[in-house]
Amino acid sequence: MKILSLITAVLVGAVLIYGTLDMPKWGDPHSPANTHVSPYYLHHSLEHMATPNVVTSVLADYRGYDTLGETTVIFTAGMACILLLRAGRKRRGKDDV
Amino acid sequence: MFEFIVGHYNYWMYVGLMMIGFYAMMAKRNLIKKIIGMNIFQSAIILFYISTSVKRGDVTVPILEHAHDGHGAHAVDIMQYANPLPHVLMLTAIVVMVATLGVAVAVTIMIYRSYQTLEEDEIIMSIRRG
Image (cartoon, rainbow over all chains, first blue to last red; front, side):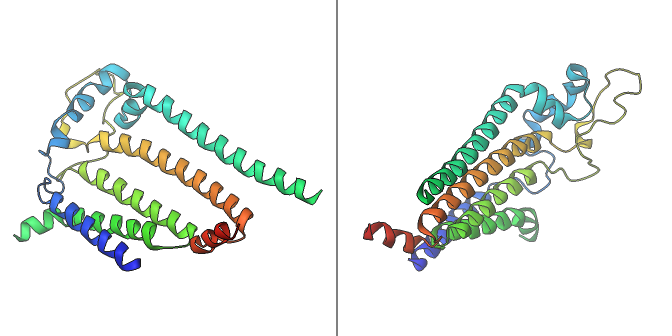
């Protein structure tokens, strides 16, 4: 079983490394990720939001609905943790009685 | 060839880290070790995304300089600032990572309370015994 897992991990790693051969070089300022949409945010963030921190303006203004959904994720996870742990404690209490 | 290796070995590091986490998720029998493997996997993905935002040269964090000195909006040299988008997306990913970690640990605590063990094969044996 462990051998099978090791073979799977090595195979998937080999496929992923084959995929990285086409990636742009590390730190290339002209890579697609650095030239496609991110210049728009750097150019217009100050004029649209008056926020010098571009990460903040993208997180809280351009992608504000995404961040709202993110707080829903956190809320759901917190509620799941609380309900799971409290349910366990109650059942153990019943067993004691 | 040497230049190619210098430009790409960071990706290979992330693939290695990711496969360590993947192996831990598949091969380890202890549930806590599986969760640690999942976290290593997610951290590797986050490092990979952050590495795509790097620009070589005279580059700082994406906080615009002279933003409030009264001259209004002026031209921004994008080669001066790192790419902000991977940072934003990975903030979201870190939030999801924390949420999954919390729920996974809570479920693990419940499993421990029911079976008094965290070893996967012992849990399966105890389920088969009824």
